[in-house]
Image 1 (cartoon, one colour):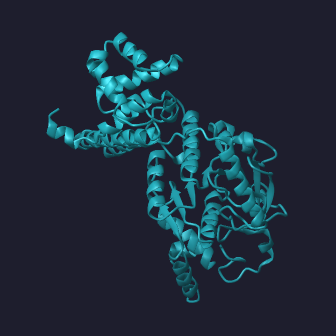
Image 2 (tube, one colour; image 1 turned 30 degrees about the horizontal axis):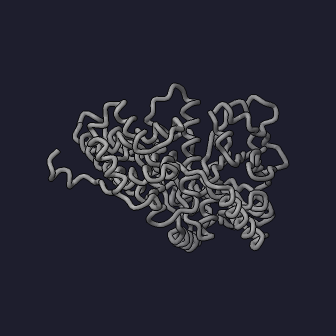
Length: 455
């Protein structure tokens, strides 16, 4: 590599020398940098050899000094390659103290990441020129390349319990000062908010039901209600188009029969409500993505971009089993497990609640009691294990048309990692395919309405 090329490669030789010299001055400084600084972060090969030797000596619990370091390097035939004992002495004199060793190490790490990004850009460029590869494969592999770099930085350091306890104290103090309020993302359903306290940050919530029960309708209702409270929501629909989702939202807000909207069969008195509903929705902080066969990498990339540009309060995914992955996974159960773990990781990274709809196994249909239970999820990988909250929708009228519980839906909270479980009754308007608080069941059905507003 000539000198002009070296100048274009991100590097910080002085920071590398400072880290190595600081460790030689105060070996205890190694404890500050070991959690994140790796051998490959160093640009110069001789610095990689020296750092590798320092770590090896440290792991053997051997005293670390000039003599033990030069001996270690000589045993691996690296002493001459690094410049001999003279260069080791030079490192000791390169920095006045070990006080700022972590700052020096962060500089080394950052320049290494920049080099990795340049290398990744080159790999992505090569992929783009390989026309025999499908564009989806090129995009997916490109995302994986960048994702691998960012994942290396995602690991968290150990935190002293004093710091964690102090943070927890402030959290409880905030709860006390705002007791009675919904501090999470509100669901808009009184009894559900009372049970869960809203949807909490970094939680993965599963909304499961058999086909046709209303998973999508309930998720859209939750998204609109959250947005009305000023929460920026992202809705990822893998089954329906963005226009179909908006049609459902408009039906709920305007109280116009969804079928009439689909056919454009609007009456004169529908138009003011229709226009108002569209205007209301247009003002809400909702972002919709209808990419089919979405991968976890694509989902994460889109959420990170939205979060950086506009902020992000909650993510909805409809639905889990329609997501795909480019990884080679032996069977469907393992694939679904990978998908659910990816969604939980997304919730933690973005620090927002992530809700995904999920299918249930057919075992429900073979039982006399059709109420879903947690075991109905177990055939779908580790969903139950990964989830912080699991909710099932059950409508008795789907199995018993003559039931007295017409238009009544049960929202069964079967798992709540941080609190109680229970069952909540909701009112389900079949004409508008929308869920409302159970108290709304007594509201009269107006023309094209069906008692109550969507949000």
